[in-house]
Amino acid sequence: MKTVLIVEDDLINARVFSKILTKRGGLGVKHTENVEEVMKIAAAGEADIILMDVSLSRSVYQGRAVDGIKITQMLKANAQTAKLPIILVTAHAMEGDRESFLKQSGADGYISKPVVDHQQFIEQILALLPKD
Image 1 (cartoon, rainbow, N blue to C red):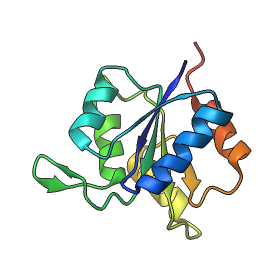
Image 2: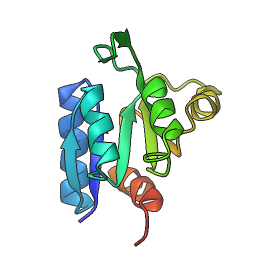
Image 3: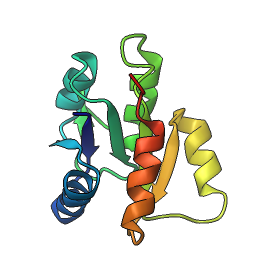
Image 4: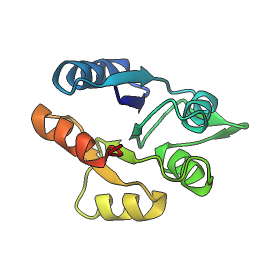
């Protein structure tokens, strides 16, 4: 079973995502907003894909406040985790945001909140999952 790591500081969102992913997608789910934990799970290969909230309000890494863009950059810059697909999730989807977020972060995809179309949400994730 493939595992999705949800990096999200809103528990209600995390719960909604978890439910869609497990019930509709048949996927395993882990959830954390702790950046050290994200790095550990990614490096250990315990997640097949990451759903990364862009605006993590409480996340700190090595004493600095970091958001989803920064965490994605760190994961993509590390040879061990560079290949792990990351989908940015954001509520602040203005025209042009998608491109700049993707470019800045090196993420593989982009989903806007709220997620209305559950089937499309699952399909977007499945499309980026490594086929092995």
